[in-house]
Length: 165
Image (cartoon, rainbow, N blue to C red):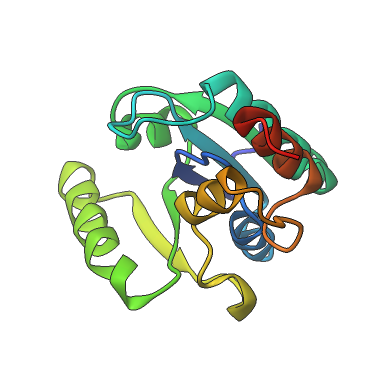
């Protein structure tokens, strides 16, 4: 690995990955050489998909970016994972003002834990600002059309999980 490689860590549960997440990754690649999609394995959330399923779905969804994007699960403190990955930057997506307060508090806490690591906020394109994995799961559970919101592999996985056509 080059010492000059600019790598950013994009953490989340990604349960499941959405077109909004994919858009944020693409935007980050305009600024960084590599994005590490860090899937939280020990989240307090109760994910629908296992860590292995979330990793596989994310890898399929991000395959077009090639070696510039790596998907990996992580445990423990994000700040420790960022250091382990030889990065100095955390990427967070902001959809709406309602996301900002929580994300701002997390960024300040991460800065308190390690002030050499910065948090960058990127917004997805307007068409994705209303997307959330929670909403996607509800649409999937009710058998709605997911084609505008997630890659086909994710829509198929949701239909299979909920046993809907």
